[in-house]
Each structure stands twice: as structure tokens, then as C-alpha cells.
Amino acid sequence: MQSILADRTVSMSEFKKNPAAVLREANNRPVAVLNHNRAAFYMVEPQLFEALMEELADQELHRKVLARMADKSKAVEVDFDDL
Image (cartoon, rainbow, N blue to C red; front, top):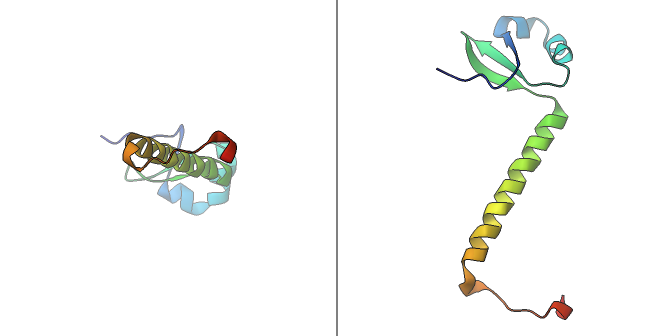
């Protein structure tokens, strides 16, 4: 069974009738748009989407840092005053 990761859901038919109204009624919260009682997609406001993208970028950067820290053979020693 598929999990629905939003407090608000609407059917695809309801969404097609008036997407702007669905977004307005969501009050800045994600909306799961259902097709045959399964999430077809999630609708989120731009601010939330931007925050999600920033979080993903931060996580990717964190993984790179950890990977590079683990490979000490490529480390370059520098003097703090040279920075």
C-alpha cells in the first residue's frame, strides 16, 4: 500500500476543475493529487519546493565532504595564515 505524504488530498478530477482553488485552500501545505486513490503527484508552493531543493543540495554537499575527508591520500596540508 502506498503512503500519502500530505495532510490534504484531492482527486485528479477535483484538481483539474480548479487547481488555483486547491492551492489556495491548502494554506501553504502540500497536497497529494490522487488518481484512482493513489498519489499521482504532490503540489507544493514555490517556497517549499525551494526549501526542499536547498536541503537536497546541502545533503549532497555533506556526502561529498564526508567522502573527501575519508580519502586522506589527496589531502593538501596548508598553513592557516595562507588562507
